[in-house]
Image: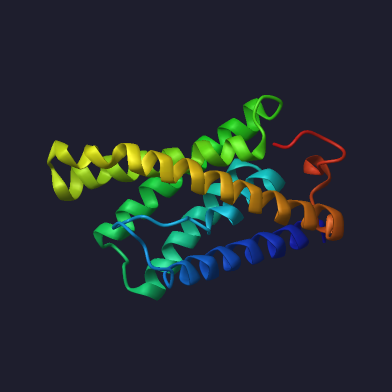
Length: 183
């Protein structure tokens, strides 16, 4: 029964991530590829609750489902999303698992936002632009990644707090924040 509840909670997080991705598409952006990455709020929550594997699963399914809904499957946008999303999730998951005493969820999210923009810029260079001038936007993207990472981390903490205090019966006993470390 506990495992079923965890699957339901992770499924809800995936659905919310897809919805946040869709809503974010309605927000005008100042530069191409610049978004807040609101779906990463749910990724960080999944990592904090269930660990790296759940975060990677959420990211992969979110990118796949969103790309099918929005018509970007196997397009350059899809490859930018999947590569940057999985790399940033990997960084956040490793930081959470190995350095949860060193890094707060805000710091983990900032590292994820920075990594996401760094990887996306590198993949855009390799697949699309192939001019080193693309890296001129790196300082701007770094700042945006750090700021959005901070915002997303703060929002993830609010969601995490709500889940752990009101839906604690859905959490796995080994990962309960009051009983053990966040892995």
